[in-house]
Structures are given as C-alpha cells and as structure tokens.
Image (cartoon, rainbow, N blue to C red; front, side, top):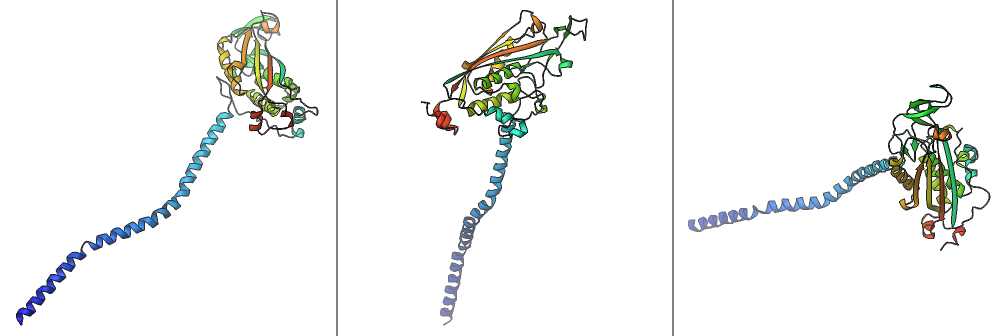
Length: 316
C-alpha cells in the first residue's frame, strides 16, 4: 500500500516538472506576439501623426528655395555692381496711375500680325565727373571701370573753359543711363508702332530715378511677347570716345541675350569712337544706335503661352 502511494506521488512530481518545463518557453513567445501586434497597429498611427510635421518641413524648405530663386531672378543683371531694389513694372497698372501709360501700350488701332517688323532705337547721355553724375558708366548692364580720363570742361567748372580735366567719369541720367538698354527698348517699341521709351518711362517720374534699366528690358520683352513676337536679330552700334569697352562687349551681349530670351547668334555689338568730334569726341557724352527685327513667334509657342487667337490664323 505504501509503495502504491509513493509511486503515485513520484508520478505527480514528474508530471508537475514536465508541465513546468513546457510552460517556460511559452511566455517569451506570448511577449513577442504582443509586441509584434502592438507594432503593427502603433507604427501606422505614429507615421500618420508624424507625416504632417515632415510635410510641413518640406513645404517650408520649398518656400525658402522659391524665395531664393525669385530674389535671384529679380536681382540686377549688372555684371560688376550691386544695386538697390528698383520699382517693378506692372502692365496691369491702371491708366490713371500711370498717366496714360497702359493706354500708350494698347493703341486703338490694330498692330497687324505681319511676319517681320523692323525697329530703330537711339539714345544719348551726357558724361561728367562722377561726383557730378552721381553714378558710374553703365553700358549693356555692365559697369565700366576705367582710369582717369581727359574730359573737356566746356563750362569751366573745374579748369579754364574748354580746358582738359582728368577725372573718373559717370553718366548723367534720370535712371542709370544705360544707352544700349534704352536703345534696344526704344527699337522694340518702334517696331511695334508704339511710343518711344521717353513717353513710356518719363524722366520726370520719380519711380524711375536711378532705376536699373534691365527692368525696362524685361517689360519690353513682355510687351513684345504679348503681341506675338520674338527677337529676330539685334545690331548695336555704341559710340563713345573713351573709356575703351572692347573687353566688356561679351558681357554686354550675354546680358542682352539673357534678358530678351534669345540666342547669341541673333545679337551683335559694335563700338566705335567719334574721332574726337563734338561732345562725344570730347568725352562729354556717349550715344548708341540699335536696329533690330522682330519675327512672329511660331504657332506652337503662341499656344503654349495661351495666346492662340484669330490674329494667329495666318501662322503655319
């Protein structure tokens, strides 16, 4: 009887030991399963919560980048100088605000969509000692550094009347006095049978005081595009005795090509002296002539710009 009881106790202990050993690895498995399930549900929630923060950061970065690009695109195109902000030119400005400006660029008569238009522009500005001019010589968007020049003092302000005064020179003008840019703008307006640059950007308007003339170029480009044209070719003749500008012509050309969205093979710049004749020969002025052609833009370009209208039906 005792043996039977002892045998049953031994069997019970063996069973308990086996059961305990079998239960040991179960709990880690349960923990792993619980963790896995929790991860599956929590991770998407966490991602969903964090996503707006990441998106907001990306948006802020894009805005910063856009602002930088915009600031760069609206900065001065002058090659060797930094300028203050200049007034923007809004083609949608009312006639009242501009004294007839908008009306001048949209005449009552039709500007016929002929294949080619020819324009001529001319500009001249006085040169004077830089302290009197108040600004440097800027041509084609390039500031022209130079040694002191032998300027003829026609009024006798610095030396005897008609004597030679050696000085740094500047351009006397309401805006920056860029004769190439002014002549190009004048030629574009002329080709389109629009008024001259002096009527559009009057030298009595305080908004254009010291203005970077690349702004005028940008606006002339937009007017040209609005009427369905692009640059055919541009031929510039710059006339000044000194300083010499041969080394600056490539930069001038680059600026014109960039501002008017054309190609180098369509822009030419020549420079010549005035053989010491009159005010130009005496370094008291500089001038410029520009002849250019405008050509109708291809129909595909007009459609891309959203300007497909009846005037374009003759385009192939």
